[in-house]
Image 1: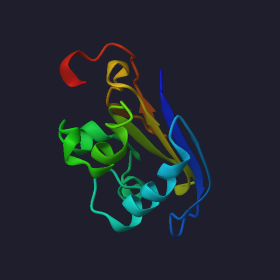
Image 2: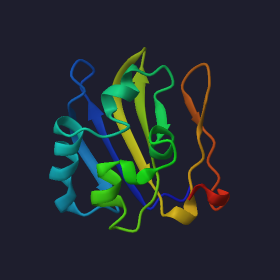
Image 3: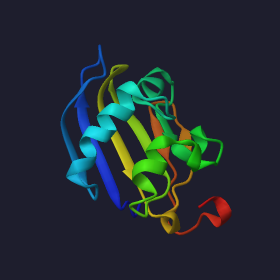
Image 4: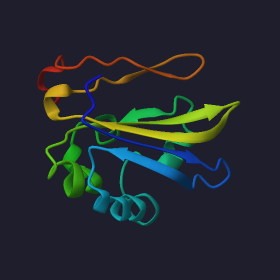
Length: 134
């Protein structure tokens, strides 16, 4: 996958509070916005939703029924940076969420929908093969 930005962190399985977050391709100044967005704002594709979901992987396009502009995170951060869809995944060990991962790509590097697998979310990713969804 040709991700243009990435964010990942360890998570406390009881609270989903994250620690030791790392990011690439996102301004350092955006960290506070992401924390506020995750815990205080009404938005799509939140970590708590994904942790409760059996698959635990979802793109922002899936969560917004293809209308990324419905997401404050997209409007306020991703679009101004020239980024498009994001895909988020919770990382589990024995059913508990211990990590969080977010990959974001420019619209030409569209991320296809995840496909459920018996053990975890399996991503079918095909850069530059997304037709009109980007």
